[in-house]
Image (cartoon, one colour):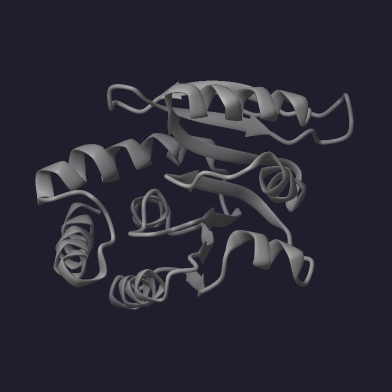
Length: 195
């Protein structure tokens, strides 16, 4: 995976000059603050899951996770045309199992009913209503993973609990950034707990 991750970071930094994909200024920063914290979500995604990444931007956390876990099928949602073009090029170049949708998350969720097994999100500030709709687009037993910090992370955690999700916090290796994991109920009390 290391060579492919290097390819991704090179592509990201090349496109970053013109497309403004991330605030990361160099390879080490993109690795330490982008790729490595993204990989904290890897153990929380089950084999073969269909995953939607909301507000994919420069590809964090989806692309590092897709490189690490080729068994996952990704839907990358990004409303910005330049960022969506980058995501398409990265998926093509790295031969990832990923569909890129150039639309806002709200527009996608308001359209044809689709379901995913998991959702990931980093750097996207969702209001409570759209976040609830995203959770409702997940299958029973699914999971939402949100990389966040500070007051926003606390707010997301409260909302997850309000939505009836079982919430855990996971360290990411980056100071101040935590990963929130919210499990969608399976609907049966006999179901085994998710890891």
